[in-house]
Length: 139
Image (cartoon, rainbow, N blue to C red; front, side, top):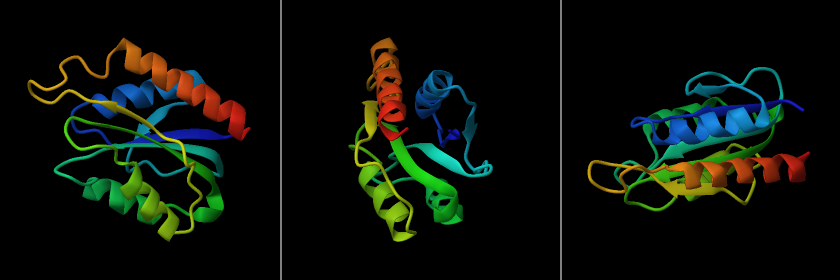
């Protein structure tokens, strides 16, 4: 099974999750715009919400994804204020015909004085469990 992890992170919050997922599933986390190599059975895609939306980098990256080279995308995200990036990412992926897992992972991320220390070890343990479950169920 070919599993890949791609993410976009300005503050390092989403990178922490990406690194934990990659370690758990046995691959390398690569920052957007690294392309998907070969055919990915599962692509873990991570982002955050900035000022109420996902970044232009993530939107542009989604436009490069080939639905025929990706079995399913599993989304993970962080944010300090707004809720999940998932609905926006899901909508963009589906508009391109890319299959998206309905379950996603979300946790708070630190931003200035808000949510200091997040993602913390509890969050990392939770994303590890989430990634393991996704691999077992989608395999």
